[in-house]
Length: 225
Image 1 (spheres, rainbow, N blue to C red):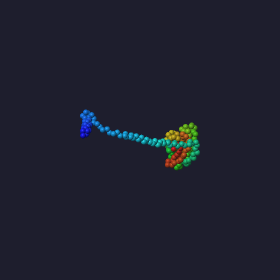
Image 2: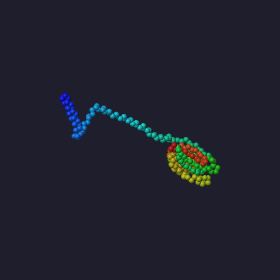
Image 3: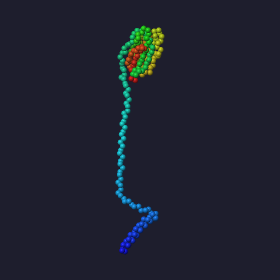
Image 4: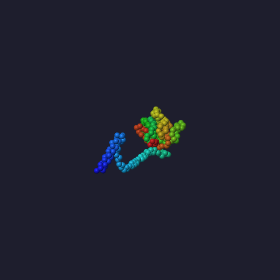
């Protein structure tokens, strides 16, 4: 009986001591005891995934536009004879001479007026190669260019049959065309008229006649074509 009481007393003393320790910590300014959580196994560290490499497509090279080749022509070395033309009969006065460029050729035009009894056609003409020109006086006549064509017209003049001057334009044209460098009157005597055409290089003329008004047209190939 005595032993049981001693055991009970011991238990009570242990409880009282424990309680006193617990409640005395705040009074003494000590932090309350915090139960320690059981340490578990550390969580496995997951390695960060490597970024997927980005593939950048190289730009497709653009071909540079090639310049169009400049058309070239084989240099002219000779020309066939040019047939004479026109119609004989009557008298024609020269009214105009002009030079210009058309796509692919330079053009020289001789325009005529028709006197009474003259045919409704250009007067007789001859287009021939020439190496130099000489006036009626025997004096040489200089013409610009390296190649020359002679235009001889019969029964025609820069004046009418009464001697009145009809053509009042220049008798030495200095055109700005690429091929034709000079158009110059060489002779006008006894209804025979000669004009010279000076070229920068040899080209063969294409000769045509037109009406309304009467015109002798000489086309010579010249760039741009």
